[in-house]
Length: 111
Image 1 (cartoon, rainbow, N blue to C red):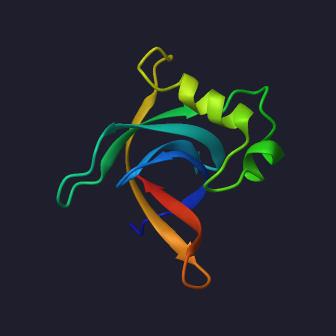
Image 2: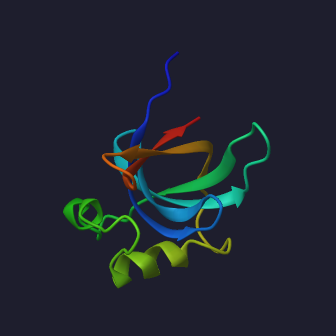
C-alpha cells in the first residue's frame, strides 16, 4: 500500500525532529505531540488529538509553519505533558516539500 502524506500546518516545537504542532490525520486537523523520538530506521511515535471544535479550520490552515499564532501555540502546548484526554498513537514520518532551497511546507505520513 502506498504511503499517504497529509499536510503539516504548523510546528510549535521542532528539535532534531517534529515534536509538537498541527497536521492533518485522515483529512482533519489534529494536534500532534511526540511520545518517543525516532531511532535508526524507526519513525517517531506521536499522540494525535483532534483540533477542538472552537478552533476554526481556516485559522489552523493559515498558521505560519514555523511561527504559529499565540493562541494556536498555547493550545498545542496545553496537550503536552500528559494531562490530555486519551489520544491516538501513530508513527509519523515528516518530509519537507521544497519549492527552492528551504522547505516551504512539510507533509507527514501517519502509520
